[in-house]
Each structure stands twice: as C-alpha cells, then as structure tokens.
Image (cartoon, rainbow, N blue to C red; front, top):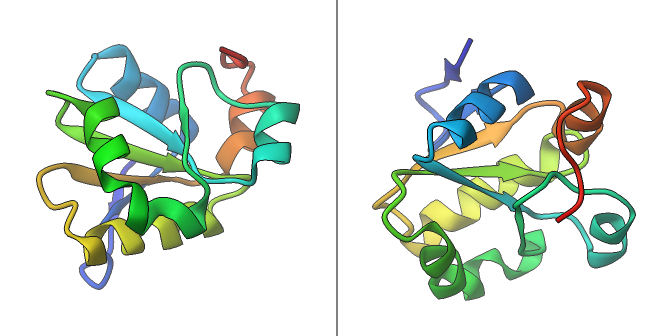
Length: 117
C-alpha cells in the first residue's frame, strides 16, 4: 500500500504497486542507477537518468513521461530513487505525481517482473 510521508515530495510504493501503475499506462519509470548497474539488469521500459543527472535532465524526463500523470523512480533498493524524487521536485518537476519504488530493481527482479528493453 502506498505510504505518503508529508515531509517527502513523493509517495513510497512497492514493486507490485509500481507494476500496476505502469500497466494502467498512466505512469513511466526512471532508473536512477549508474549505467553499469543498468546494463546488468533493469526493469523493462525504463529510462536511465543517473541520480546525479536528474536535475539537469528534466526535459528528457518530461519528454519520456509525455501525457502520463505519474513518474516512478527506481534504483537498486530505494535510497537513490528517493533522492532523485527530491531532486526532481527541487528542480521544478511539479506537473507529475512522484513515486519512489521501495525495494528497487532487486525487488523487481525477485518478483519475476519483466527486465531488459
């Protein structure tokens, strides 16, 4: 179940909730890990934007999200993706509802969800 902390500009969700959101076609997912981690394994259909690049890549994120309403951030376990959501908010990405995928790519892969392009 989604967990919204009023001190955070995003909502924490599980990988199963993330998968449901992606299936409704209202959300996109951004992988914020390093390129070498992404090359090893990543959720299908994600855009790679390393966490330290998020603030400078808002136009790329907006282009990827298009008319979607939600942007999900995923990393290895959930720490960097939370930071990326904070960065995105600070940089002005306010038109989307932001989510942090708890458990990250490790939990995504363990759940047997699609990986690769």
